[in-house]
Length: 291
Ligand SMILES: NC(=O)c1ccc[n+]([C@@H]2O[C@H](COP(=O)([O-])OP(=O)(O)OC[C@H]3O[C@@H](n4cnc5c(N)ncnc54)[C@H](OP(=O)(O)O)[C@@H]3O)[C@@H](O)[C@H]2O)c1
Image 1 (cartoon, rainbow, N blue to C red):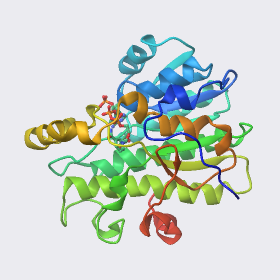
Image 2 (cartoon, rainbow, N blue to C red; image 1 turned 45 degrees about the vertical axis):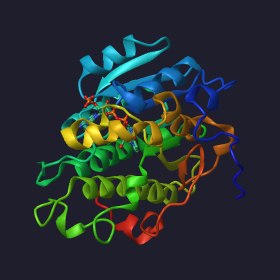
Image 3 (cartoon, protein in one colour; image 1 turned 120 degrees about the vertical axis):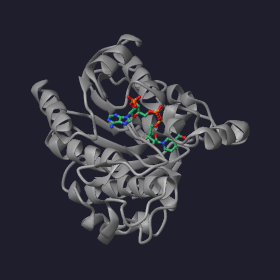
């Protein structure tokens, strides 16, 4: 398949990449809508007419975010590190009886300085990968029944610096060695490989799955990193960062734009197809991924 250049770039905003699109009649589920890129994506997709199911850790957070924007929204609770909460969320979404045109797996945590675990597994892997993997699997039929459902997973350029071997299957607990960044990288590689694997499983359907690096944007994502690193990033931020409006562009582009129709299993950055790593294209690794 020939994949056309988008005509957009790192300076494009989510409003620009969705300009002129009419999303009325479409339903989008977005995780992490109370902050950063998730909030902006919800705002822009709702402004184009989509009904947005806005997920956050608690119903209060989700409702608070939905209340701040114009458009048609339904707030839902989804604590990704609590699998019961993920299943409850999925069942609530299913009970709305809507097909899902856009499933945007956006929420995430980054570079926890100390090892934290849930279910005996490292917390970034649980939150960023396993929680979303569970959500996607519960809702996959709803995406498949949409005319051309799109799953968009927030990966990161950090997927290029993962654990040894890409996914360190014999150390998913983190107890045999831990660093916040490489475990973040591992979880973001898992998001990318999920898109690769889903695209294979969705081949006989109209649904697609892709992964996205949004750029480097100052959001609340750095809140776990601690004083020194946060200050260092602030000092250098004018060199590297783009605005939240620009940061949300690639995920909104991949979620909605006609030029991405039928494109699946790819990694996008700056609103265009981008190169990933050897691990990022490793279908065997994707096949072994827990979930
Ligand atoms: N910003 C960047 O430079 C950058 C670069 C590459 C990739 N990304 C990716 O982009 C995505 C969005 O990040 P952002 O920059 O918008 O960060 P953000 O402002 O910190 O937003 C992250 C969202 O995820 C939610 N979240 C965190 N843990 C959760 C959990 N256990 N269950 C449910 N929701 C949870 C947060 O909720 P709370 O507020 O309640 O914690 C928040 O709504 C992430 O996946 C991140 O890895 C960002």
